[in-house]
Length: 148
Image 1: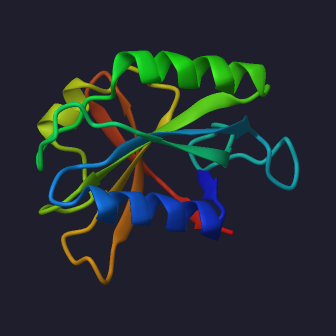
Image 2: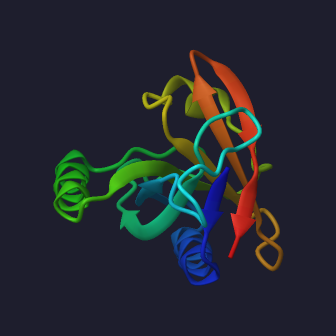
Image 3: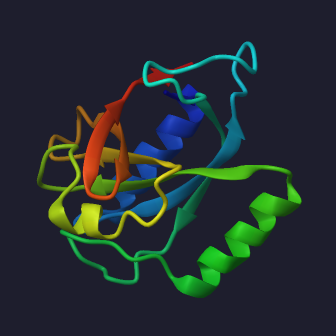
């Protein structure tokens, strides 16, 4: 389960809309098990994740069907996340013309099985759809998104 504050979700949606017609992407930083109690568990027995900071990244692909984060920017963000005592708990990106479900490319690029992959479909810009997934060895498992 992933918890996202409304203001951070709004930031992610606005970033996705600004990126249109291309996909937007970013990194979600926070803490594992940092909800009401550190023993909060999701349905699959894994600790929940709470987003505390959103990092809007540059999509070097500039494409409506794929994204790739700029490596130097990604390294800088990872260093900052560590210095703040946080963890990378998720990666988000938008789908501009398709559903909020991992594409074959998304699955291929899912290098971090411990994080949430949040997809924001802005196919209908007035009604974005947010879904989150865990992707491990090509297996996709949807996880609950809680908006606080």
